[in-house]
Length: 229
Ligand code: SAM
Image (cartoon, rainbow, N blue to C red; front, side):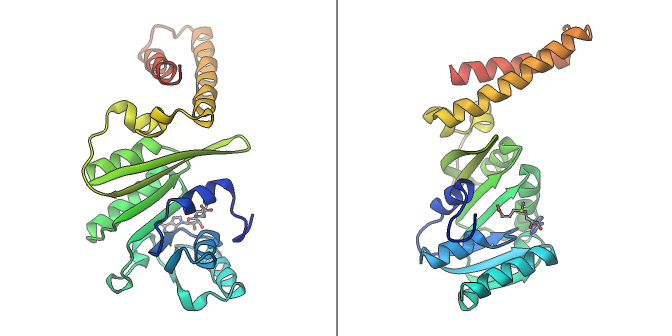
C-alpha cells in the first residue's frame, strides 16, 4: 500500500470524502489518505494532524515526495487542536484508531466548539460508541460501508450535521450496514458468533451457564443471529 494504491480500508474512507472538501485528516501517520485525495484532485486542501513526531515526519516526507507541500499543512497536535478556524475545514477524517479514542478526540473538539459539516470515521473497534457519539452530538449518519482485509473487518461511517434517532440494533450493527447486509457484513458477524460460541463452551465447562455474564452473551448471540439470518 502507498498513497497511489490505497488499501481497501483507506480507499473506502477516501470514497466518502466529498468532492472539493477542505479536509483535516487526524492521526494521519504516513498521510497516504490526504496525499491520494490531493493527487486525484478530489480535495482542495488538507490539514494533516499527528500527535507523534515519527508519524508526523512520515507525513511530511510523503507530501514532499509527491510535491504537495503547498496544498497541505502538517501539524503536530492532539486531535482536532490541529485545526484552526481560519483553515475553513469542512470535512474531518479519523481512521485506524479505536472507537473510544475517536470519540474522545471528537469530544475534546466539541469542548473547543469545533464543529465540522462532514465526519468520515473508521474505528477499528467499538463502532457502537462512535455511532452513539454521533447521534447524541447532533450528527446524522448518511452512509456506511464495511471492508475486509485479511482476517480484519473495518466499518467506515460517514456523517453530517443533523438529527437522527438510532435504535440499539442500529448502534451495534449500523443503520445502513444492517439493512444492506452485504456478504462482508454477514462474514464479520458470523465470525463474532463463532467467538461467542467458544465463550459459551468455556462458561459451561466452568459451571457458569446460569450467570448474568452467560445471559449477556446469549443476548448478543441472539441479536446477531436475528440480524444476519
Ligand atoms: N489514519 C491512518 C490510517 O488509517 O492508516 C493511520 C492510523 S495509525 C494506526 C493511528 C495514528 O493516530 C498514529 O500515527 C498515532 O500517532 C495517531 N494518533 C493517536 N492519537 C492521536 C491524537 N489524539 N491526535 C492525533 N493523532 C493521534
